[in-house]
Length: 189
View 1 (cartoon, rainbow, N blue to C red):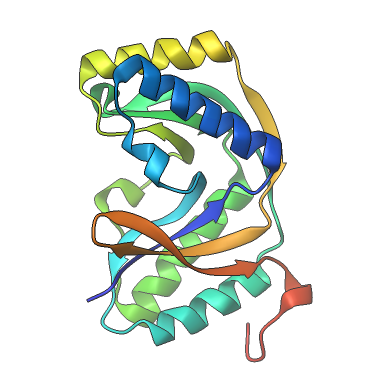
View 2 (cartoon, rainbow, N blue to C red):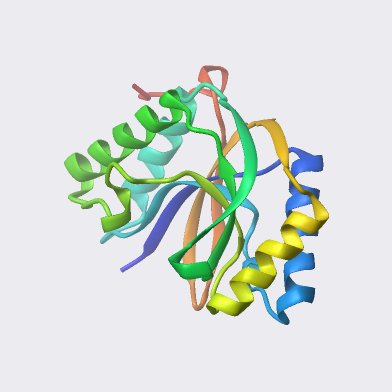
């Protein structure tokens, strides 16, 4: 059964490049950083399983066609899970949150996909800088990120939605779609 996720790849060159620079600084401080194997992104829908891929591809294309490209602000660095995950924070955005909830409802209705435990009211949009760290590495990762950029603030427009496929042990970009009605798909809502 395919395992999928929806995310916005960070295509803004300066933001993408700075995220990679932060990830490399963390790798140098901690000796590892599996996040370097993943395309820098902002997740919209956490991993889920489906029986067949084609109906989700059609939903994905229609979804991307109806999303107006949002602008997001990335500011500050934080951690989840006692430092195991270090992230660049996304400023709360009601429109982005409404979209996330709409996608959760659609997937549950159309494909019987239940939201993950982390997809409740506490869901926190972020861009992962490091993952798989112990608490000591997490602290070193935070210090490395703050040293490089004491108070990072970026604004960028998200222009593409990505359908990510879990292949072996890494999330692989499987399908991409430009956001917005001008790229509409026949039959899109």
